[in-house]
Amino acid sequence: MTAAQLPQHALMERAGLAVARLALAMAPHASRIWIPCGPGNNGGDGFEAACHLKKWGKHPVLTFAENSGNQPPAAAEARGRAVRANITITDKIPERYDLCIDAIFGIGTVRKIGAQYTAWIRQINSKIAPVLSIDTPSGLDAETGVAGPVCVKADKTLCLLSLKPGLFTADGRCYAGEVWLNSLEIPESTEVCAQMNATYRPKSRAPNTHKGTFGDVGIVGGAPGMSGAALLAARAALHGGAGRVFLASLDPNQPGLDRNQPEIMYRTFEEMDYASMAVVAGCGGGTAIREHLESILTRAAKLVLDADALNTIAKFPALQLRLQQRKPHTSVLTPHPMEAARLMDLSVAEVQAHRIDIARAMSIRFGCIVVLKGSGTVIVAPDRLPRLNTSGNARLATAGTGDVLAGLIGAYLAAEGDLFERTCEAVYWHGDAADRWSAHSNMTAKDLILAL
Image (tube, rainbow, N blue to C red; front, top):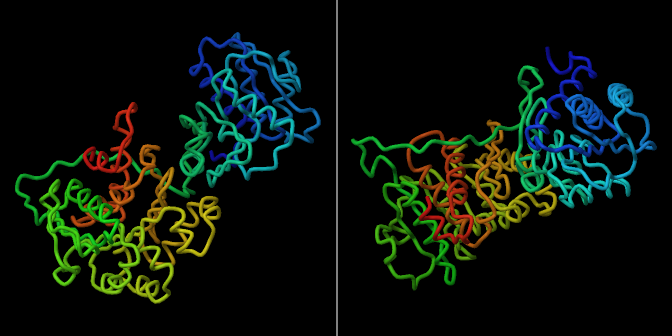
C-alpha cells in the first residue's frame, strides 16, 4: 500500500508513533516534553506523538495556537485524541522541559512566520533542551534547503516516508542535525529527485598495474601571484592517484621544479598533449588563462574547468559555444555559487535558493558534469539523478581547497571508468579527508592534500 492509498489518519498514527519512539531513544530520562504544534499535519503528528508519550508515563505539554485556523481533518482528530487523553494543551511556552519536539510546520514552502510562531522558534533555539524536528526543521524549505528568517535548529530530524533533499544542501546541514528516516512501513517511492553520494570504500591497486594504468593529468593555471593554486591542484592530482602530473604554469617566472613535490613535471604549453590526458584548467588562472582556453576546449580528452576558467567562459559567448560543442560527458565544471551565478547570469542568492535545479540547468546547458560546491555539494550530469554529497565540513572553508578538489577530480578522470561516478567519488573523498582531520586544529589546503 502506498502513502496515497493509506487513510491520512492511519498515516498520522504511524508517524506519531515513530516520533515518540525516537524521542524516547533520544532522551530516555526526559519527563516533561514540550511539543509546539502548528496548524497542519505536522502539528497532527505532534499530537499523535504526545498521546503515545502520555501512555508511556511521560508528561507531554502541547503548545497550540487556537486562532491558527481550520486544521486538516486528520490533524483535528489527533488533537481530539490528545484532549481525551487529558494532555495539557496551551498557547503558552512551558517554563521548563527536558525535550522539545518541533511539530510546527514541517515540509513545504517556507511560509511567512508570524510573531507567535517566531517566539516559539526562538525559545526552541535557546537550547534549554535537545530538539527533535518532525520531517523538516520548521522554517527550512524541504526541497531547496533554504532557511527562512527564523528556523528551528534541531539536534535530530526524523524524516517520514522519504528523505528530504533540503536537509543535505544549502542551510539544511546547519539546521537539521542528525537525520533519521522512518518509512512508516510504506514501500519505497520510485519518484526520486536526488540520491545521496554514497560512502565509497578505498580501492587497492592490482599488483600488475603501472603508472600508465592511472593516466596523466595536465594542470594549466597559476598566473603571476597565484602560482600556488596550480601547485595545489597538481599536488592533489598526484596524491589522488594520477600516474603522472604535468604543469604548464601561466607565470613565466615560476621555477621549473616543485621542491616539495619533485614528481610534478613542468612543461611548456606547446609540449602539453591535451588529447591524451585529463586537463585541469583555471586554478589561479587570472586573465592569462583566456588565450589558452580555446585550444584546451578543442583538444582536451577529459577536462575539469575551475575558478578563472569558469569566470572567463562566463564572459565570452564564443567560449561557451565551444564548451557546448565538446563531446558530451567529457567535461566537469566545478563552480562555487558565485561562479555558477556568473555562468548562468543569475544572482548568488538565486543559485543558493535553488541549488539542485540550477546545477541541473547548467549541466543541460553546457552538456557537462557540474559540481556545485558548498555545504552539501551537488553533482549533476544531464542524464543522471543529482547526487548530494554528505562528506565535508567547514574546515574546507579556506583558500585553496577548491584547487585541491579540481586536481583530485582530474586524477580520478585520468583513470578509466564512468566519468560521473569518478567525479562523485572524488568529491566524496575530498570531503572525507576534511572529516577525518582533527577537530581540535585548523586545516589548510596543503594539509588537505596530505590527508588524502
